[in-house]
Length: 516
Ligand code: FAD
Image (cartoon, rainbow, N blue to C red):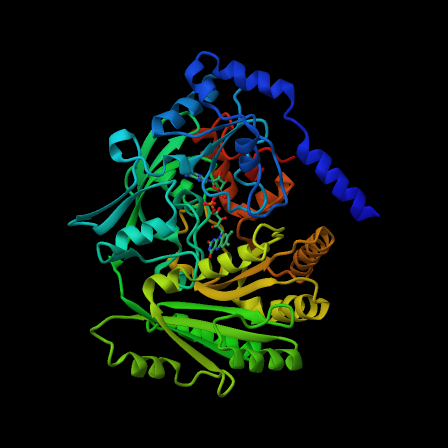
């Protein structure tokens, strides 16, 4: 009954029209600029898209949606708000793949960054431009609205590619740089925010500022991992390297967590591999289509017997030059690892197929109506020194034994030294730390609330056990929790807000400066 009541409340709240006062304020703020106000899309299709995201758990209705055809359109919008008596909120929406409304702007204006896509430099857009410079080497100037898949395809045409990735490529450059952008390459190259030379940022004052490590460096580092709080990224200059042709992609199964993490940590300490990740295999999260059907059933029956298995995933890139030696090189790298004998599985694939691997899963889930469902995700960074406690308390006692949800449960280590402490991203204070992604999905509203309760249990467990986790894609209701999250970076973060977005216009969906 409670769930039925909560559900009806959810429907009522989420379908309410925006309050008329805010309509008045946005219209009034924009009134000197008739062209701009008439260009805002307020029809139900625009509003629906801008008030939803991948999480499917939050719905904040904006007053209107700007579909810019140039960076100047966005600058005009931000300036109108900044100059208004009562400024209205503005959120850049990259590809809307946040899960808790981070790219929404209740009663304000959402900027659909993807509308800039296709704009050539002739009509105001940036697109994707590959260049070379004696001091930087190869790099790409990329519009903040671009998807990483398009960056990959374009740079591959030049035999080049960025070095740091996310697992899934249908995310925008501005969106991932506002967080960190991590994947199995992070141990080696750092997150995506460690691989940017320069940015163009439209601040909350409506000023377009070019920044880098040496020019306007406070804005540069503040925006990287800055959760959209200081400005809208309209261009990023991304580090490129020569692209390999092919990839050896390997998975190994472990029964023992201690051996699994020992091997992961060993692999990220040597420079032999290009990618190291890992994930859990349980009854609820069985081995997937990477494995041949016969291997799959062997692994899944072992998982049923043991309750939980750990899968180490590694990759090494190669080219025509080392085509004859690559297998030998891999064998040397894997010598001495403690995976279960006979449980090593290999694939040979193209570089593009490897990087774009999640796309196939997306299409398969879409085909069965399981992509656009609730995603009560919890993403954490966990200090290496507490991983054994985390495994017992969370993976075994909560995830495995309570067996409440399904999805993908990722766990892999990274080297802190590859992160720049001057960025706004928040990570644990240990040389090696793990990312744990509990990527639940469910189409059942009751199950959604059960998983949310489980997430709360996990956070409570960490708190009680004094495991100093940091949330990735942080989500807090109270200001005191945001302050705790940022720790000694909070003061600077707040000062940056006062400097670059003093009227608190940008990215209200993060709820950092609006929380009590
Ligand atoms: P949005 O959700 O649209 O925006 C995110 C935030 O950034 C909002 O606050 C928004 O206002 C702000 N923003 C958007 N564009 C700009 C801009 N140009 N300038 C300034 N601020 C901006 N993340 C990883 O790190 N690694 C992964 O492997 C990974 N895998 C994922 C797989 C899937 C299936 C999904 C759904 C997400 C995954 N993510 C991963 C999370 C992803 O990085 C975040 O959701 C991120 O926000 C990018 O999504 P987006 O481009 O759609 O941004």
